[in-house]
Image 1 (tube, rainbow, N blue to C red):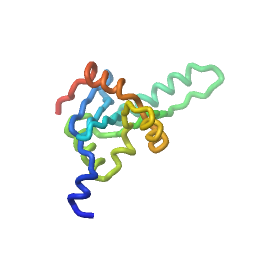
Image 2: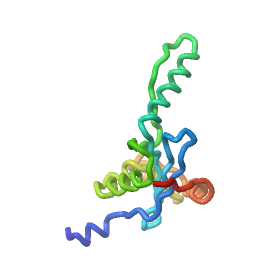
Image 3: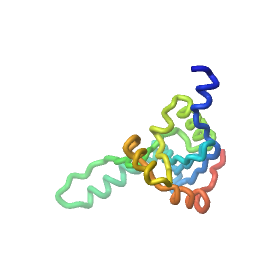
Length: 145
């Protein structure tokens, strides 16, 4: 396969939107690719994981007849980074695209139910285009580098 053929197969990030969580240890990231597809994932620091562990400890400690325990259940794609700087997020995304693992680590956002069903089987993750578009237009802010 020629270099041009490989380049044609690559999806390239066109826009990256980030919304920092109030605690400052995680942010939601939405990536719009050059072909129009949209992906999402949560970028988090180790502080986020520690906070999740503390939260489950507090919850389990308050439930009678159960031993308090620290654990974290990560139900959406989480990408752990040292710092939540825009450059770190962009560089991480570029690396994932180059390593051809991006689509397996992010949730693809679609609006076609037939495509959704196929993607759900393939990736076990999907959401709706409508929700992502609302987030892009109304909620997200860019974090500074």
